[in-house]
Length: 272
Image (tube, rainbow, N blue to C red; front, side, top):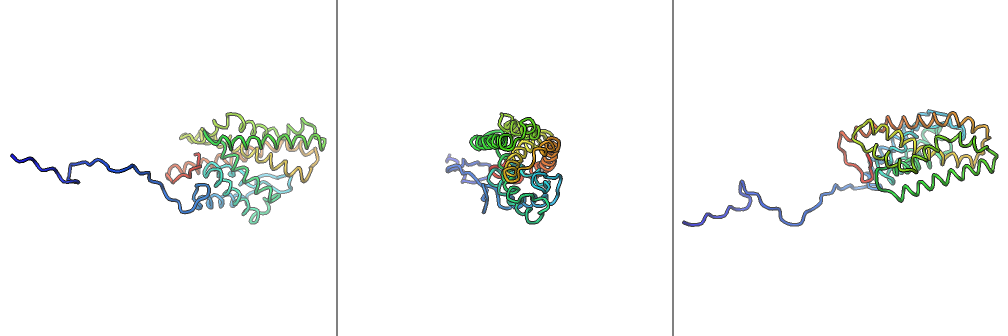
């Protein structure tokens, strides 16, 4: 009997072994900022600009009002990563300075604060970014010490009054410097939206609290408001911080839930 001829390659029922080296397929992004598509950056910058129109509290230090956009500055850091998040937040705030001057305060401080808010938030992650987190921690502690010395030694503000005025910002800095920063990052990355909401609330409190500490120090260096105003801050600053955190948690949870449901491409620096 003659041997059965071998089946030709590709015949039905015959599975061929893959040949050649394994290849990695990557999505090509034509233009990006810090790994995030430019379209994502523009979209979130637009959100920041639109929310800049809506005031939610008086800024006694700079003679203006705080925009609702302050509550979403940190969100850009979690959705886009450090570079793209700071870019989106800064561009959105810059647009708000021109389009909504009634909430701009001191314009360059407002834009700088927006950049810092996204930058601090991008450090609040479950793992990684140790060097960036250390640098941000040193900046926050350094600003606190410099502000305290300037107010108490330079302008006679009583230490207890200063600490009472910024107790919420001190709590924000504590959450950031301690390992709680990693815990908050895990909450934000959790599949449970209730944990995400809580993580965004605490993360926004931490990031915007340090941001406002930096803004207040800069503004005080320019304006030197009277020490009596620190007593007013003791009552209003925690309320403002709670408002920012609630805005960040509500808006952020909705956005993150939508992005997860749509399964859109995540930028490399995203942490949600």
